[in-house]
Image (cartoon, rainbow, N blue to C red; front, side):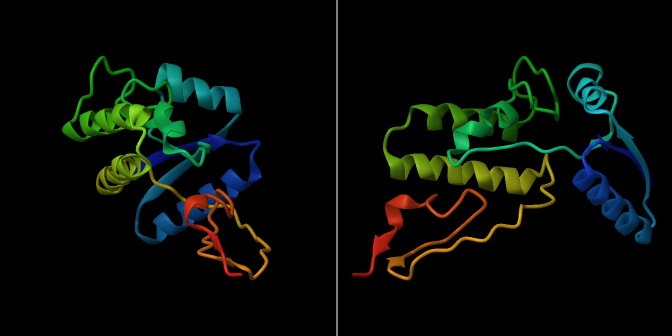
Length: 166
């Protein structure tokens, strides 16, 4: 098995990550042709010409899952698998579209959380994207707070569950 892996060559972290991926897969007998290109070339291949097999790129997000709609909804501009679909090609993509549409209008926090929890389950089952790294972060917090669970989104992503111990 062999394939080509593209990333933007001006991003040293992505070049280093691609090299690690290439070396690890070589140990499994998989040949990776690593091709670093300039960022504009990468974006053109990803979104216009579709001349790629695998791409290492960074998608940013927000604490609110709906910020990822452009990637996860089948009509999104950054929906890079099965791109530019007039309608969802698979049952699971149809479910994700429905979840994002329902999540956008749901006002009850508990029901909204359940909607996006289901989206995460579907995404984990289908794996259209492979998440490779999270940034290293260090948070300093006073010991008078309870239920702090820092993530890449910061300390207050679960503000509704944080309490003071006093």
